[in-house]
Image (cartoon, rainbow, N blue to C red; front, side, top):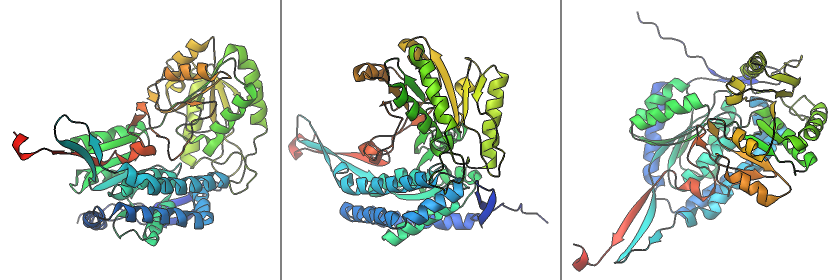
Length: 467
């Protein structure tokens, strides 16, 4: 008799105290197929819904997120551990993104006339079908929003495979879409393990995939999408450079660097991971950073006064500790921190590493935790060279009192985004995405809505000139 392996349930574990909150059963192949069939059927109707009506429903989602903000911010904090004040800001950002596409989507999707010497021509933008969205846990609502808002506005349907440690966040978003009045099947959540993704991508009803996560997983998804000739967008993290030029305000730069790195307990793709400072200001900058590190309050993420939350899981903190230990073995120096905090939960000390040498793991890898990698460099050109000495290219920052100089430096950094006198940020109207091994494609801004549409050319000529 053939035995069937038992599939482990999807679990919510609070990283503040490592207590199990809730479990969800993994969907069967039959349930997955039913979801796919419903999505495909829903798309056939949704693509014909007037854009103004789609916009109205997006506004309703934004409204409901604001109404249910207390519930949503608590869920995000319970499931992945982020500070509740950060969860609140995330929910507000998501509502703004839905409003942005509701306000602008119809304009973005309007026919675009093209100049041609004879007759007329234009592009029209048509949805392509059911999209698979695969998202990580670090921003459980924002990651959903930045893929769902533009692509649903464009007339596509969507299936979400969210990270396994934020199932309640995934579930509540499907509830909100339905409550807002979206037709059943246009947006659905899948409780499935990663090993089901290839079969989904092979299914003809899935037309494209958008993924945010690790480079190895993204490479596998891109390969599968290519195999089945399906469009993909990837955001694969980064090792962002935070350049402080010698004419910068040291206090402003230090405050931004520390707050940016401790944001979401260091679990942000665009946080300042490699802090590169010109030697003329480096010692002053570092003294200010150490003072700010010493003043950070570590504790309950539900407490509004807490500055540093736990990491998302026991595995997450163990992985970061191993990376720090390996960096030290390869010659780096820990200025402060470097250990777990002796208390329940997935807590790690705020850490500063320096003396990181080319060719070592820390020099190339992304460390996804509250670890500050500090580099002192001789001059501006050395800062640019170091910033580009990575396979990643997502975001970055340049601090200087001279904006013209900062922009000149920013133009030479090989990355998708550079912010001047600010950590890499997020706004609905600004494109988000990277280059090199950080992936391809753009989310947010007008650019996002064109990622998964058919830009169809229609050419009009007189009958006499048709040939």
